[in-house]
Amino acid sequence: MDILRKELDCIDVSKLIFEFLINDGDYLPFTTEDLKLLENKIHDWDKCMKWGIFKDMDFIKFVESKISPKFIHSAYIHSMKFSGFHGNFKMLKYFEAKGRWNYNDWSAVSRSTSVSEENMIRYGIRKEDTFEIFKYVEEKLLICHFHCYSSSYMSIIMNGRIDLLSYVWKRGADKFWQIHIERSAAFNQLEILKWIESKVNPKKINWKRCRLRCCGRSIDTYKYCEMKSKCLPKWNLEIKKIAKSGSFEMFEYVVSRYEESKSNEIIDWNEHVITTVSYYFFTIDPVNIKDKFNIFTYCEERATSPDYEKCMKDALKNGLMDIVIHIESKLIDKNLERFMFTTVDGGQKDAILYIIKNNDVFDLRPYIKHVVEGKSRIDQIETVNFLESFTDQQINWKEMNPQKNLIYSTSVIRYVKSKVIQRSEIVN
Figure 1 (cartoon, rainbow, N blue to C red):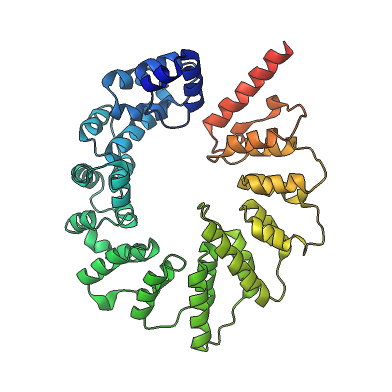
Figure 2: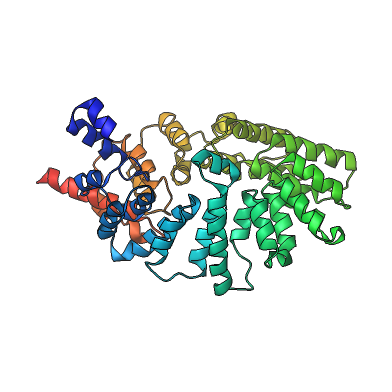
């Protein structure tokens, strides 16, 4: 920030830049003085406090004073998790002293400490620091629920931490070995899978379940589980799981294995056409999107009566634009506005824009209201803003009720209130 002020030589410009950065989740560039300057514009104080582990106590105490009692518990949990992730034992203890914590709280902290080695390198985290915190938190979990399956085990496996698994293995995690080995397959952690295999009676391992769990994940893990398994799979089930994930390499391999098996099982290609577009894991990966298209066209060629109406609805919701363009000409009704509610639920801008541009001008206000009152999600306000940019019609924000859902985002409520105030100021 000091460098920014010096280079710009204008406090107003630097203030403008920081106004752009606030409420974006990253307060690392801010000093305590910056927070004081912009305090009237910051509304997510509960997410701001955790950045104090890189600052000083003045930063933490100032933020603490701004947090509503309603959100203070979650702010301390965020800060404990953040401290655990970055291996800051001192700050973890500071925030721990601020309240009483249950099993779910400590589980969340434990999961944050089992960070992958890739992320440790990325963020400059020392393995021994997170290991010490992990051991400390595990003691808390044992006190809360000695015989429970700890949710931190899943995080250990997902992040490939054999060192942490070895530690908890000696402390009772071994009795859940079948769950561990299946999750190793599901998270494509072949080395952990082999490590567990070496620790247990291999005759007791359910390799069929392991093979099913890794469908669509990694072809190497799949082939290893396939080699160990002694029975033929349910081919429709495995093809369905791979179609969901969108790995064309594995899809081709499993289909070829089905053909080699001379199985009497009939593959339901009509179902797999729908499955391919119905599920999408939203990883920004062009290869995955291309694989989805290849799987879709492969299944389509073999399907007897593809349900293009449902395929279009799901493809728009999930933003699979290559598939949208591919099947549009096959629809009887070319007006895509009937899919708009589902599309805005998905929040995929390319799909929303495609409907707007390729159809007659229509009223977007019902769709804005639908998103505001819909199930809360991380990009909810972003979708509302995007829709707003395409309409010049007056929006009645007063009639919108983001609290309509049992699960709603406080940021959406604040957004709607700000729009109502803004509109009132214009009228007055």
